Image (cartoon, rainbow, N blue to C red; front, side, top):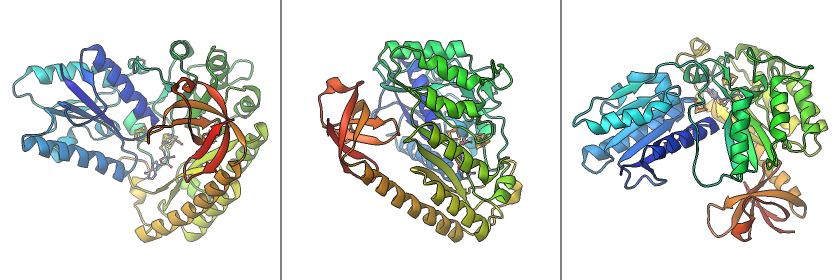
Length: 442
Ligand code: SAH
Ligand code: SF4
Ligand code: F3S
């Protein structure tokens, strides 16, 4: 039996795709293992979002192929996902003895490709990055083991054209999966014991755009949320990513109406400078972020917000950045993913160059990181002594204890029997670390 290891880089979409590929391979008799050591096939599911993300995956593949040349590596090495889609056969220039390149739209064909590669004595590299229409409903299944919290893909691709962003190239046109198909998956998950679902897409608030009608003034995404909330057993619903454009009042209101919809929203704002937002082709003003953040916090008391920010976009002056810094501080995001601009070939903004010096980007990033560190440590300390409802997801990585999350997306580590996994328990917060809270059953 062949042993496969799948290494995943990138966002939740890739995690979900890797689960699907694993299930597909298991169904064909492969053994999928968590460890790289001892695997005879290693598949690397990749991300292209920043130059560094690509370099990491290329470095990993290079290392494996070098081992193989030295007679100790895996028999087959493949690159899957976003970088495969983005660079296709060009990857063979960097990694000439790579065996397999499969793009985001072709993952369901991996078992066929592996079968052929394994059946030939000296197989040529296989590259499959064709675009495929329709929604990738094709990656069904996931681990046999129950997932307390599961990702459910509801949308593929993206039709926005943010100047910096490679995703429309790596994931194709925007397509929404049908509500029936999504609900069938959620029901099956719930029946197997899943308590929380995160609905995934690049711009989920625009779910159904072009294919479904707003009925009774309710946008298709909100209609979907309502139906998911009716599935018995589903206690929590999250979604990501959303875009300030098309984030309508009915979605804000859903956070007040649907108890299952969690009190945490990831609301990427990218820049606080209207001039830079325009250059990024993000067609909103900073004021819109301020209003949305306020409305969300009013809709659901205790709501926490996280965001994405890019520093050093071409042409960003100190004054532009000062606006970003001020907005970031003012809105008090509980969490943030902070990035230095990385020019991506083939994106609409690539021609703008990359004219903010590296040291300046670094300094701007550090200023935001400092605000964030202060904010999260005070917020975490404020939780100490409170009682929070925690969905226990499984064993903590460090072993011996359990890990769960509050509805505000705070990680809590606690002691307790494994029978608590999958339960919502009230936990008294006893201490605060950098990235998690310590708790004890109340
Ligand atoms: N669809 C999501 C974003 C997906 S990419 C959305 O619109 O919010 C995740 C984040 O990576 C983006 O929000 C952005 O902050 C960052 N990012 C994307 N391209 C980048 C680039 N070229 N350089 C630096 N950061 C980038
Ligand atoms: Fe990229 Fe913009 Fe689409 Fe998000 S909305 S995936 S940043 S193009
Ligand atoms: Fe995600 Fe990276 Fe692809 S952020 S969609 S894995 S380019």
